[in-house]
Image 1 (cartoon, rainbow, N blue to C red):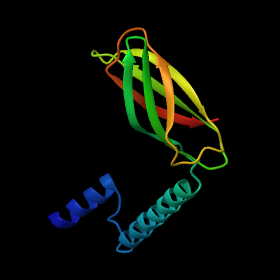
Image 2 (cartoon, one colour):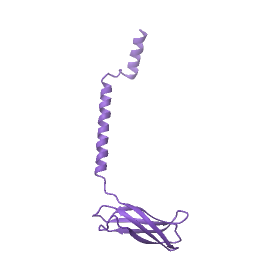
Image 3 (cartoon, rainbow, N blue to C red):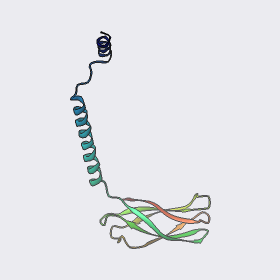
Image 4 (spheres, helix red, strand yellow):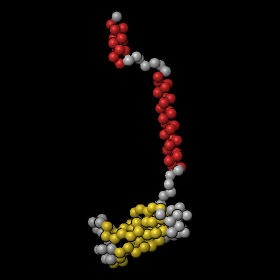
Length: 133
């Protein structure tokens, strides 16, 4: 009698015991959510906007007022891009900045060069990000 009472008390307090097929329903719902996520991830990858990446080939600190940066740009062939070149000092502060227009006709293997004016002597030259124009 205690067992029935406990079962009735638990059922009235927390609801009925889950049916055997509820595990199947939960598994189907989880599989459906996984499938929806995979479709979303694939479409986000396939339809992602084109990106632009720059790689620094080298830099030269000409003097305390000028630095030359050489770099390559990987971008879609038919698009113009703009790249931001920065020169940093010993304290990692920006002492020179310049935006460079990279024309659509520029080949991706071509090494580009730009001169950046600086407010004091720099120690490194970077092209940290690019974007499509």
